[in-house]
Length: 402
Image (cartoon, rainbow, N blue to C red; front, side, top):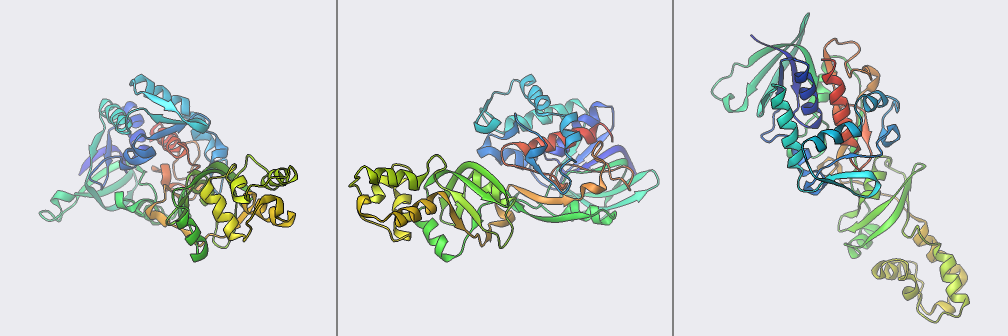
């Protein structure tokens, strides 16, 4: 039987960070993953430039049944700590709106940095390795594995004993890069609860009438405030052939539930009704669509006026009709039919119940030596680098305690 101190299943952001920190402590670490390519989610994130953290990261940027759970990890390893590593490697980066940090060149720079750190910490890394079974022992775990290239030639798995086992397998989002429910199955195997999962940071879809409008407006983008369940986000919104997308929609998708309506303010910088009434009072002779297009894109202005059946010269339009246009812009109420699901979701909401884990170590309270980190845990960040920071922070904490 093979022996090592720590086996980490999942070589994504959290798993790599955990492996690095455990290796630096002199632990013999084996990092395994079933995928062919390492850290694909890092590579494709941020349009290929990886939004690797956010300067404003704090507990309020995360959703969980226990909103306090993330505090310890974020304190033990902060966004400044990760930025320091990035700067130590000379990786050029820049800050976009709302504190988002991106690589100047490509996301592979972050992957290469993590791989260099792992190599320096003597981490053994094996991709295309399947987990056959996991068994608890008095001194740790027996993990049976099989390299995919050997699957047909050798039916006998390799069994490795470890004192600590870390599950860093992520959630269900983006199955085309290998997402599975494996992490939740391990939790269930050892009697841990799993908070119901759902796609998050995902475009929303709509019934035929609204979808037809979205299709006709595909490509139009506005800065909007999108609200639901007493939560609102002020960021860009995009009309697409499939519905609504853009940062503000992705953000609110984490709070939206089936049957709820969302409210969209398409012109948060203006009180549209007041503006139109002011222009009318000055004797404005232009068509209402023309005046409205001074505030929002022309195609959107024309669509709203057509939908609300209001047209003509502004000076001739009743105030009640102008109020209706204002409400359609500043208080657009609509009910999503659903979301695009895990196929395009950036993260998975829910996961291993934080009540089962120590916030200080990420270890299961009732299973000595078993740790869960990253997206598999019921901690989900807002859009903007927060989920990567949770991966770095939770991975660091587990790495200090395995």
